[in-house]
Length: 118
Ligand SMILES: C[S@@+](CC[C@H](N)C(=O)[O-])C[C@H]1O[C@@H](n2cnc3c(N)ncnc32)[C@H](O)[C@@H]1O
Image (tube, rainbow, N blue to C red; front, side, top):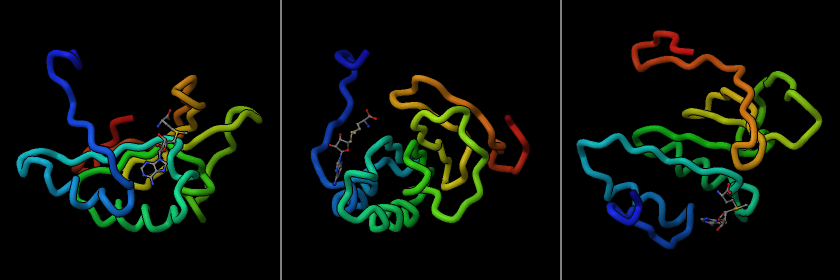
């Protein structure tokens, strides 16, 4: 599928280059910014969080809870093993092990009109 319809791959910095890249998304598309296990490598994770929160569309992150969920109450993870937290637009939804090895749902997923989906 990727060979038939190759994705656009852009080398750049998640903080300084993201806004310009996001602005290239087609006007009739919903922008979704997704990242996993990246925040801990950034010199200034807060700068990235401020940048992504200022963008239109949706933001899906699978990151360390200490980096992405500062101050939010979370249920205990399912085991002592290292877990990231899946968030949608900053709302915590699930515990995730590295590379999607496991996913333990705890959140409430809602549609745009506020209906509970999961
Ligand atoms: C631990 S890897 C995670 C890779 C993959 N997302 C995954 O979950 O397997 C961290 C990733 O963050 C990227 N990264 C680090 N600093 C970055 C920056 N300033 N801007 C964009 N990406 C960055 C690295 O290139 C690397 O691909």
